[in-house]
Image 1: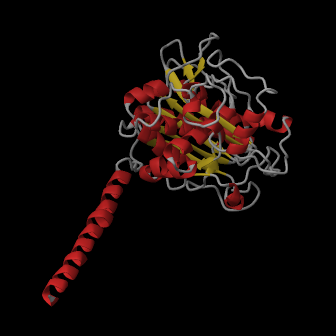
Image 2 (image 1 turned 90 degrees about the vertical axis):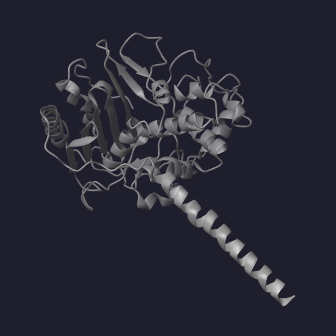
Image 3 (image 1 turned 180 degrees about the vertical axis):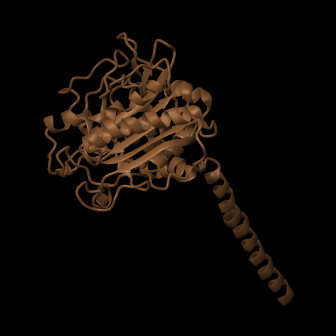
Amino acid sequence: MLKIKVFLVLFFAFSSLFYFVENYLLGNTTNSKRNSIYRIEIAPASPLTNTEEMLRKSSSRFFEESLVRSRFNGAMLVAYNGKIVFEEYAGLKEVIKGDPIDSATSFHLASVSKTFTAMAVLKLWEDGKINIDEKVGKYISGFPFKEITVRNLLSHRSGLPNYVYFAEQVGWNRKKYLHNDDMLNLLITNRSRLKIGRPNAYFDYCNTNYAILAILVEKVSGQSFAAYMDQTFFTPIGMMNTFVFDINKTEKVLPSFKYNNRLEPMMFLDAVYGDKNIYSTTRDLLKWDIAINSGKLFKQETLDQAFRGYSYERRGVKNYGLGWRLYEMPSGKKIVYHNGWWHGNNTVYSKLMQDSTTIIVLGNKFNRNIYQAKKIAGIFSGYGIQLDDDD
C-alpha cells in the first residue's frame, strides 16, 4: 500500500513538472519565436550608391536650408530600400534647455498615429476578427449610426463631426480630460444637435473616426489599445521607443513648444488616442516602414487596400486611403504619407512607393517648413515639387 502511495505521488509530481515544462517553458519559447518573426534590425552604414548619394545630398540641402535656418528642433531620417542615407538631430529636448535630441528621443506623432491605428484595424481584418465592410454597430454596442462601416471610418467618409470642435460646444467641461469613451458618449447623446453627414458621400478628414477605431480595436481584441499595439507591433518589430501615451505619465514624455519657444500646455483633449497620442522615433518609424514592406507583417492584398484612393469627388492628385494620405501623380507614381500636427508637435512620414524612399521628420517645436519635406523627392522623375501643409 505504501509503495502505491509513493508511486502515485511521484506520478503526479512528474506529470505536473511535464505540464509546466510543456506549457510554460516551451510555450514561452513559442511566444518568443512568434514575437521575433517580425523583428527588424536596421542595416549598418555602408558606402552609398550613386542614387543614395543623390538622395543624401537632396536631404542635406533640405535639412540645412529649410529646417536648420528656421530653428528646427527635432529629428530627420531618410532611407532608400530600408538603408539610412541621411540622419540628423537638432536642438534640445526642452528647446532652450535639457539634453540634446538623439536617436532614442520619442516624439508625439500627432496624426501620423492614424497610420498605426489603421493598420491595427487591418491586422484584425487579416486575422478574421472583423469585416471592414461591416457596420460599426456590430462591434461597438450602442453605436447609433447604422449605415457607417468600418471602412467609412478608415477612409474619413463617415460623415461624423470632429470631436475636437464639438466636445466643448455640447458642454464638455474643459477642466476635465476627455477620454475616448467620453467622446463616443457625447456623440451619441448629442446626435440630434450635431450635423451628421451621409456615410460614404464625401471625404471629410475627422479625428472622431480614428478615436472610434481605437475603441473598436479594444472591443474586438479584448485588450487596451496600448497593449494591443505593443504586443502586435511595437515589441515584435523591436520598436523599443514607441508607445501609446498615457495621460498619467505626462511628465515623462517630450513636451512641445510654440514657434517662439513658449511651452504648449496640456489641455482637455489630450487624453484621446487613436487619432493621435502615439510616440515614436525616426529609427523606430523606419523599422515600422521596413516591416510593412517586408511582406511578413501584412499581406499584399491588405496593403493594396490601404494604399489606394477612396475619394474622387474632386479632381486632383491628392487622395486618402485607409489611414494614409496619397499623392497619385499623373506619371503613375505615388507618394503614400501622413502628416501630423498637435500643439507644437508636427511630423511627416512619407513613402515614395516606386522609388523605395522613406522620409521621416519629427519636431516638438512648431515649424511649418517640416511639411515641405517632399521637396527631397525632386531627385526622382515623376513627382515634381510639392508644398504640403495638410495635418
